[in-house]
Length: 219
Image (tube, rainbow, N blue to C red; front, side, top):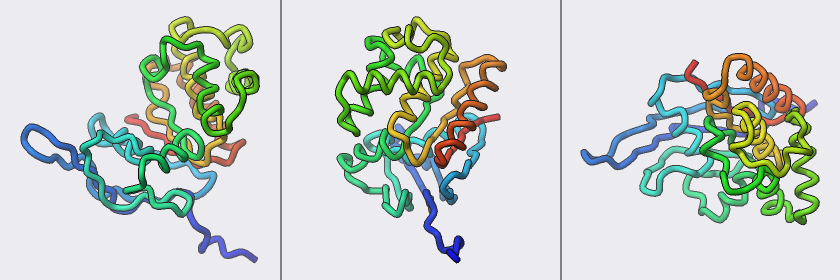
């Protein structure tokens, strides 16, 4: 019988600290954050605005401001991420770990149709042709239950509602079947009814794919 207690976690964060430069010197934005996430587990990160929730997510994704100072340890699938060179982070980001941002209108590119934005990680990480990536984009949009998905492949972000844009963001995050999904207040810009739909959808997709989910919320 396997000893589950000895299994390696999907994500292990130990004493994570982030300092940012200010006009008055260095400010400690994160101080000693630690937690462990198993495969298939959901971890909630809750705190008031300005408490460092999004900064924690950016640290995990390697997207902190250029001058930020980071110490501690982030081990993802037995690989240390703190200090990992950018080319190696790029291989993980969007492929093995992905993020749903809280405001899709600013995260999506207004100049490209949505299928191209979903196809980008597929072409980058899985080297799909444009036609194959577009077909996969349609499958992903149908999976996240975007109404009239085929008709909307060539739509631009401004032509969709807030809830529809968030479903596009989820499609992008799921494109390469990541092991870790970070949802940074994914329902902030949505009304209450749509919030419930999106959270239920994320929960269903995480359960089906066995991903680890870090769900960030101020509520």
